[in-house]
Image (cartoon, rainbow, N blue to C red):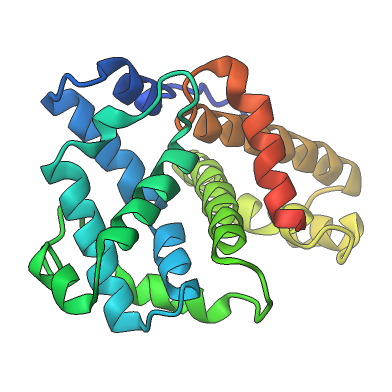
Length: 242
């Protein structure tokens, strides 16, 4: 079982910084950066709308309508460069949009059914059905889902790295040390990989390090500067614990 070093190349950790720096200058590069971020983290918005009491059909229309207006009116130009993290900007923009919508018919008229992004609502609804039945506010549900999406994206990046190096089997086993820590002894995991428990411990440690690096890279893409990464991580983990 090999464990070669993976260079963290090709990932742009400044997508939101690019949007903020652009200000009112609406260009193709800025819109592309924002589109990538929205495509990655739109599901938490859908969860928020559902928590506000809308059924699946209405939530689809409202989510699509929100993105249509976001890009048509260049609403991202209003993001505060000093205070604006992507996560908070996105929710505030959605709340403003919903406040402007009198009913679903008006939502349809203002963009429902016409999306600027490719949105997989079947996946979103599946995730909604997995949401815990709690009395959490829509805002807390949004924060929790956003954190979960970010964790999943970071783990998916690590998985791609392992698969590209021909170590898909190693990932499938080692990831259990992250997703089900303590449930399986290292000895049993070692047997699955035909190696030793000591080698599994080392490999599991490296997997955790890669996952932390990937997580920090994902967070770096949704804050205005590298100095905000730790605070954003703390906020997201707090959302998961709430």
